[in-house]
Image (cartoon, rainbow, N blue to C red; front, side, top):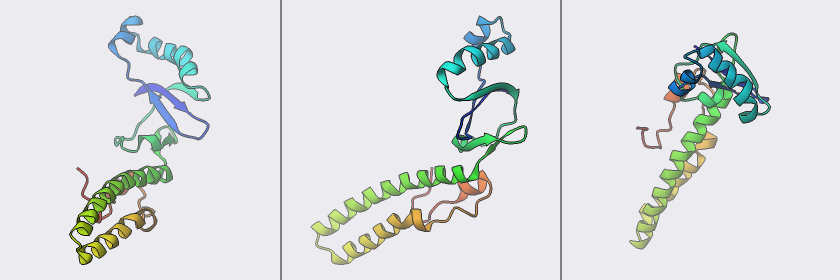
Length: 158
């Protein structure tokens, strides 16, 4: 697909290329002219520090790790270390939700003076808190393999 790719000093890559009907109409349907306008007029203002160019590039089909895209040999690839960080951040969000529910359950157990439940909930909370240190994502070598990894202690993703 012909688009504008922006490469930032940190190596991350972003794309621009979804030309809307207004932009195309403005240039008489000439997509190349519209892309050239975006490249020379809009990109420098909106993306200081980025190197931009118009090119035909193959993009990953899976866009879940879009913020980890980087330029490869003639295409856009997923930087797996960045993708692992993104995935762990998603896990942390769900872990934090589970910890909030855990806090509610603990308060109920305390109110009922159920020591056995309190101890069980404390142990469950510790397992949740330890997930970022104990859940290993390093074996995932593709975005699909990474996305398939999810801690059993957390609810399944929808």
